[in-house]
Image: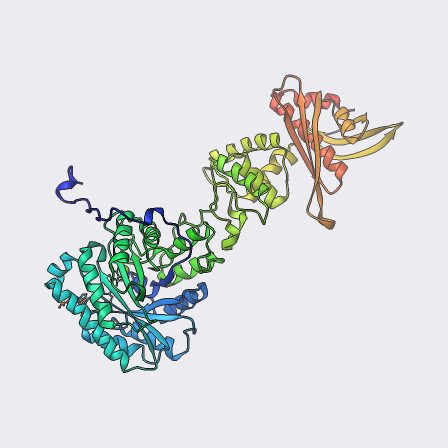
Length: 564
Ligand SMILES: CC(=O)SCCNC(=O)CCNC(=O)[C@H](O)C(C)(C)COP(=O)(O)OP(=O)(O)OC[C@H]1O[C@@H](n2cnc3c(N)ncnc32)[C@H](O)[C@@H]1OP(=O)(O)O
Ligand SMILES: CC(C)C(=O)C(=O)O
Ligand SMILES: [Mg+2]
């Protein structure tokens, strides 16, 4: 890179528009959308779509709700020409959808383009020529007047050829290509000349499209340029003012949003920002940005995953995992504090209340995405995510202090593996940590008996591989089991919940115990279809775990001593 880039690049000059209005406006309704996936998107692919892929994409665009679709550059290839014919001849175009075709401002290309749409009900014919100084001088070798005349002559030719096809309603679209790098007064001059040449009748409109063919400045500059045109164009009421942002600076979405504030009625773009170089503006992001502000965009992304899969299939380009709204990771939180807040947010969110889940600008369910993938667990995760996954997948509700305790075990696992763990792995770890905490005492079976007015218990177990029996009494099975084990633990909390339903239902008992000489508390858990068995197992689990925590080297002997 240059030490002083100023010698090679200079800042884009500001637009003289001191009384600009767009900064204090708001977007209140969606624009007219135009999908150029099958044209600008298609021309930018390693391998342009074949007819089958084009048709698949066309049908998806129709299903999403696009009413204007640029389907081809018919004079570019036989594939594109034939595709337009196929759409028309096979009745693929719904009555409320208008196809659009693009051509350079060159006679033989325009003739071929007009031939391709013969028989269509309604067509937008899109003519372009570049208008900026560098194109005038370097590419065309034309003066301003010649460039304006090129546009006018082409439009007149379209008009003449359109008159020869009276059964088709023709709408003109004109783009001063490289608009953003064109002097505004000249862009206006060409556009006004084009509208005058087409001369729309009362009630008719011409589409004037102002492309950021290359995004060369900040989005506020584009907004100024669009507002300037909006305020200076002749016959504005007969113009649909359209924008076509590209994403060279990564700000196409912002540019389109500000352009709408500045007076644009229509936006051209592609799904997920496909298109030349860094892409066209991403219409999905634009539409869903609007949706999150309470404005229905008029496009349906309620099954956004299927849109992404079809786009990937047709373009052979992957959607980035962090792509807004659609990426595999965008409804996923790995870090602990995010997971905690999301979990609390989901618990609190009522279905009919305004959306208020932290870190989530949109309800994933509105886009057909599930909550299941919301929280994932890796070494950056905390208790919230772990608890959410176990609750969501296994119905296990852990007391808060147990969440803290268990998340330390998860942390050890993720630190060791360096990988994400899923709900199944968490459940397995939970089992190993609590249900299978069988040292020094391994529970085998138990029997309850009456001991006068008290509850007696006989626990059959193994200690160090040897069968042992513990007996005790208490006010209930839990107290009796504690007494039988002979470990000086105090039960501080006990919870039992059923998991699953009907004949397959199992009870999970969770017990929190404390012991002198051991800081804090320790949890145990047992699972069984019989609730008492689950409780006894939980006591054995807790007693074992707290002794291990105490660092009992003599635990096995001590346990054996307690046996009767
Ligand atoms: C910004 C955009 O996305 S614009 C759309 C771009 N998309 C495409 O180009 C895809 C399809 N294009 C093609 O298949 C071909 O370019 C064709 C069939 C249209 C034309 O092919 P060719 O006749 O071989 O011309 P080529 O592609 O080299 O284009 C350059 C010529 O077109 C002229 N030209 C370029 N754009 C325009 C325009 N909008 N209006 C008039 N002439 C133009 C150039 O001045 C140059 O003319 P020259 O050969 O007399 O110097
Ligand atoms: C044809 C025009 C509208 C274009 O794609 C562009 O300028 O980016
Ligand atoms: Mg383009």
